Image (tube, rainbow, N blue to C red; front, top):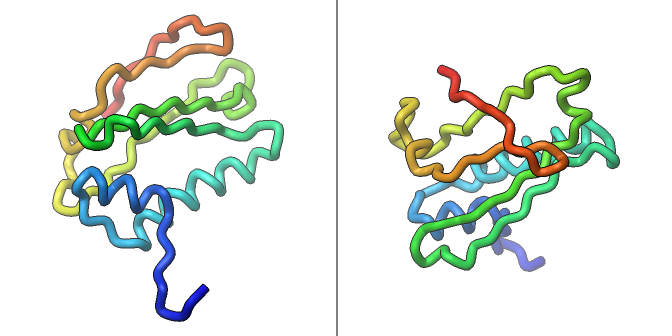
Length: 118
């Protein structure tokens, strides 16, 4: 790699495409958090993330996240948290309002109940 040339994560490019001015260190932190969680649970219990950016021109990103059962053993609740990293917007009504069609399914495809906490 040439000296002085910047490298960026996929999260950086998605955020920039969506119009968010995201510093490299925040984008890297998000990716490292996801990778760290996957590594902590072992190769057989890896979370997978599929991203479809074909509608990026309309600022739409479709994402499917698969989380192994091992992350919530014995039927325990699994607490998922939305990362609030958008500069200048630090309240619960921030970009979470732009998340639509949020569905949780089990391994057989049955829809599971979920609730938004505070």
